[in-house]
Length: 592
Image 1: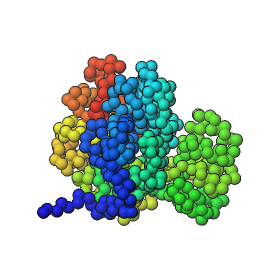
Image 2: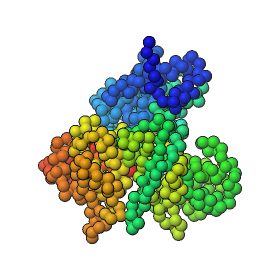
Image 3: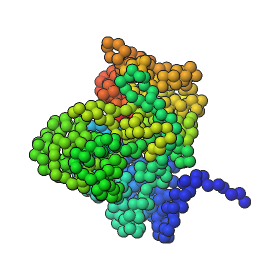
Image 4: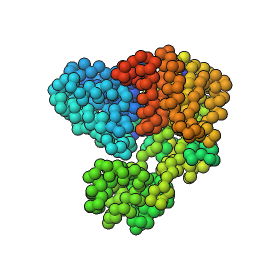
């Protein structure tokens, strides 16, 4: 008889044993259905059909629209949980869903993110346009729920999901549960909603207690998560911009040894940082608080200094924080700002919590302040390494954010944490954030055009490391932009070696400050437009990474011009072609 060794590593086996310990028979049956659902979800890249015994007569489709993959992950989590109740579930990307089917649907869940300033992610653009437009049919037979993902730092928080929810209601559909709007750090709230929705939809009580269900719905795809990060040791940290540069960019290498963590090119690493100590001390001193006073927040009860250092966002403000502070303080001057969108936007830019309590004094307790503040979200960085090349390591490329306002020096919470307070042999809390929407083509022969500015080149280092490690010398063309050749050419020697060895076929660079007229990557695209269009005509994929508000918009405008000039397209046809490239996953974006 042969004995098959477990495919799980020690960490995974221990986690599985810990999860299974103490469960009763009914709970183990639920877990069995959950794992059947996970297995079904991984069986195909097509719309995933998830089923588990015992069978139910109920059916549900989960439609998701995502930019980074988080909506897809949440859809899979909900599907797996429902499968444990015997419900037949299908998860389908919104760009794969045929809108003509809407008339025949009975039960739908929409899980969709909002991208940028209220924009739908690329895969949800067409559906969003359809459901909010005049062609959408009456849907009086439809039962639905919407889960909207967003970021409260942006003015139009969760707008895509809200638009879809309002349109469905207008068309006569009936809500199963009210819309759920989720901020960036949503795991616990999403788990509670999944539990509630499952019980309502399945029309049966929870397996045991509510808390038990929430615990069991946590994804087992990775032992390490936002709530349970891995302590990675810094094995290298080097500044990769020159002394004369007005930018401060670091290359940081972290050890994943013993973690069992895996990632792919295109994924991101989440960093759980600490706030600047001087800012924490200044807030406590100005307010006259006792740093040892206990405050209770979502994560538990902590001394005030620890809460401000590790658990609460203090380096930036958003609309909700200011509105809550105004309600707590009753400050009339702040009320006027909150009521004026233009003034509120102006105040949000470049101000932090210390500014807020200095500018609008109030008699608040330490607990009042803690109640006002947002939880400290992890910062995500595009991974700049391939695991096939570096093994149990992960590399990131970090631009340090520093600025001065009102005579006080400020900085980005995570970037200054890594730049100023983390050194070689320090430990950093990390987890991997999968991004299935930013991946190299499966066919290694597919040509790729990579467009990145500044640290937006990070995932392309990962892509090219991966191709080199696997001896894939397909056609690859890199467009890279920064300010100055002598001080800001990130990873210059690596690109030159890849060119020499044949893993990078072409590179075009744009250094905006090296001449009187500023030149950017979008200008280089226009200069090379004939060849760019030829590559696309031959099936190339385009990847774009960088600043969302300016660079990404300008690059897409340049691509539209290229389609018109080289493809003989009208502006309408050019836009349609761009949308088609996105839908076919031939144009992928990782913008921030």
